[in-house]
Image (cartoon, rainbow, N blue to C red; front, side, top):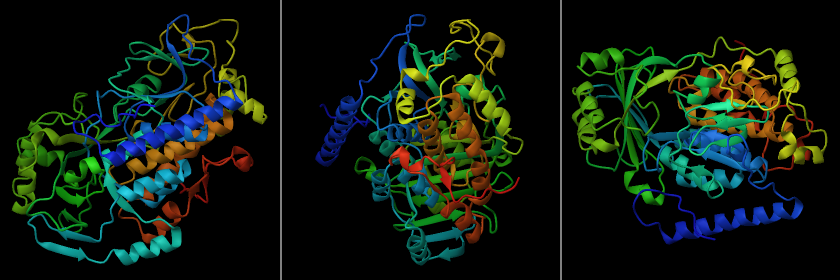
Length: 542
């Protein structure tokens, strides 16, 4: 089998990387052979109306959230489903900033595959020292020995937090997937739900039993599905870039932040600017870019410096790594011109093409509720087949999941829907959920974007695990999507409230370290009595 091309930037891969991918392709080949021995996998079909390729699960958005969902579903169904991820970019390239693999994130990765967690932590690094400087460069506080606290955490929960590059997280998740799972340069214009699933309009079109929107702040999937308007601008603008170590930067394994004393980083309420310089774990191919700097400023300070930023412009790339133009660096230098020379010297030497400028956006979670009885009833009406035995569950992974047309109306796939999915356009009842409708749901920032508190990636991975677990338990049906959303809302609210840097050690232990996730790689029969994927979790009351 040909070695999978997992990187699209220039440069030859190492012999070790090639060997790893030969082994991984061989692993997926063995899985396919094993699956073929116990079932005949349904061939790829073309729908007669739309001439669309038929797949099981379509995921729009090839960032870490979308890839994590694909990896989780692949693991839960032992690679027996046809899962596709559609990414708008033409190729992956080193970009983005840094991610902290917190304890809850490691639990979620381990639930997908223990080997995956090992591969992530092997690339991450530990921060040994944190230095807090004010905006003039004067040291406010230095925490030199973080190892002791981390040792205690590891002894108690068997997890050791590390930091790793955003790009590296995406790449590692990409490498976990079967070859050809991700399709690049694919921009969905809209989708249409019919009696059997969802048709995504690309060139060519794709018909899936389920659609997962993982397309970030300004999600097209969300816009059509929920029609609830754009996210709220947090009045904060960020700049990010990957760089190599140079004179003036901190020593190895040391993070330095620049803020006014007592002022939290990146808070929407903050009225001052802040900066962070931090090392990060990398891949072999990106080890020369093992540091990142991040600058954040309230919009008032941005405008005060004479920099124009339109938070409502959809052309403003609001995801990590999509720099608008080289003017992003010029803007950063203007807004932070009076910051310490050792910091701004590093910023000034950065390649302008690698600098990202974007706003921070939030979705209000406070008003979201779900009526469990109504949600479950609607879902039961909408899905005519539910698994009742191991044979039924096997069938639900394939053609038996398709619901029969209601009221004799037949296929309605040519009828467009409005932003919220017009009920009048379709006779098949569709369940309405917190982050979805019918056979559509959302994960990551598309569902619950909020302030930058270090939990965005972690919660996106959690989303993928919980979604995959409910799909395996219920089948590829609407009820599984609604149950996923129902379980996620209290968890997301709680983590955003208690998972930030201002939370007490006791709160973090209660809400981040104790709860774990049902393992997707274990046999389903071992978890038959479970109704929730998350264990030992007591949500906050809101």
